[in-house]
Length: 294
Image (tube, rainbow, N blue to C red):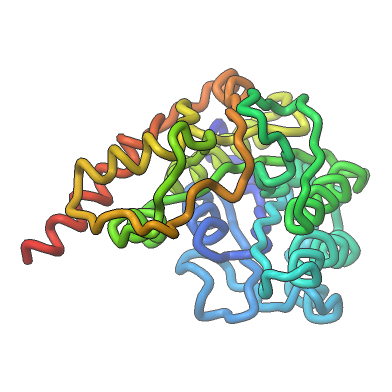
């Protein structure tokens, strides 16, 4: 990041220091003073200034937000997976944060979103300009949060991540190994991004904002190979001992069938460490193998 030694370190506020938000916050401490909002101070990564607060409580928020941050990153997950939980995480929490934060110096608000805002189920390609019409309440609330961020009056960028996977996010691998997935052939298209690339994409865009480079209001962050679910499952089954697929195993995905186009993100100069599912799952598969042999 092009910040000279005689310049003050930028101030970054990360609202939501869970797995992804915490990784983003930690990575940014190399070049910035970073504050992390989470209910439990001890869960905020070391090196990040703890800002323990409940985003549903404006009074507690007002006590911990840093003065006039340069960058805000809003990265929440629902506390409950119902409509109220999604509304709280993606809409009400953001409204509360904006209400108590001095945004006079804000260069960019980054809202961490999801490809769940797309409703396409016809194998079509989607990008940042594609229609958004989520069918489920979860995607509808995420989209509501996007629109709140973009209408907030501060420079804002939405980052729509596809399915995040990686170490500690191995439920999909476990499902294949247990035979819980028995997808149709051809299966629906699926899209994913390794958690390391998800973190790096956000950090990359933050750096661009701090350097004064122009940013679009939306980026679709997904790896370079949309792939049908049955192909992913078949490849994993070739790599690991797996139980036979259950006759009543899950046949399709939960996110429709679409192909996510990441060209806008690539055009910013971002490079993937794991550009496809094989490169991303191999280290996880090797870790499983080592565990079985130990």
